[in-house]
Image (cartoon, rainbow, N blue to C red; front, side, top):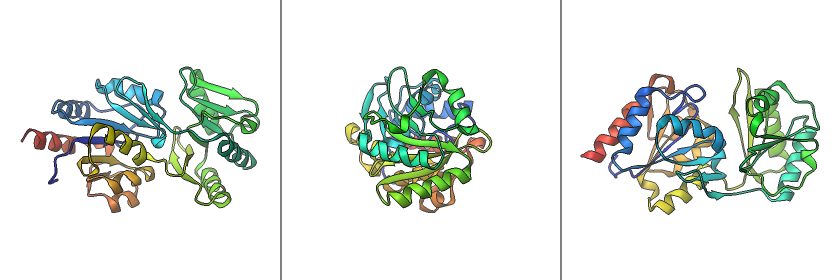
Length: 280
């Protein structure tokens, strides 16, 4: 760690929070101690901003947040810094293909009262029903979402079992080779997975790099920590890329270092080290 780190980017699930919105007291204390040194800190997550807010509240810090896999960036006051939406045509063809695969389309957006719309034209599997039930207050049921031409969609996705979502990923990549970035990620529930589709060129790094440029921070001055495949673009670009022990093997292979598991305060030694170096 030869160069001073000026920006710390933290994934949420599996990195900062082990289960739901639980962040350990040790991690909160270490992060607040690091924040007091003047370093910029940003959460960098696939979550919606509204579901990221409880983490920010638990930390008691005003932080930037790169959300929805990089398609949405919020400032420390919850205002939109940048967003990248699908064109109506791209959304429509993705939505139709997802429906043809027998899955319900989820259209993630960023509106005051609504975070996402769900297609009601196909029967929901248990994973989709669970996601809707948990987030019903900020969901919009649309009878034929797949047929709508919308210009407010940041991420297109669907929920299901691992097998279903891998099949969906293969169908999207087969039909639209290279047009989109597709990830299959763990979701809520014991066997719930999420197939996330982003526009080509949109990922966590594009969102984080826009923020870093605004803050006047070079890539070499960023430390990023993650555990999933969608963290790979970030770890490839930053000066110090850290993988969690509970993370994907392919992420560990490109990381500068691997720290302990999320459920055993794996972040804490790193946070304390960064704070000590900034005070030195």
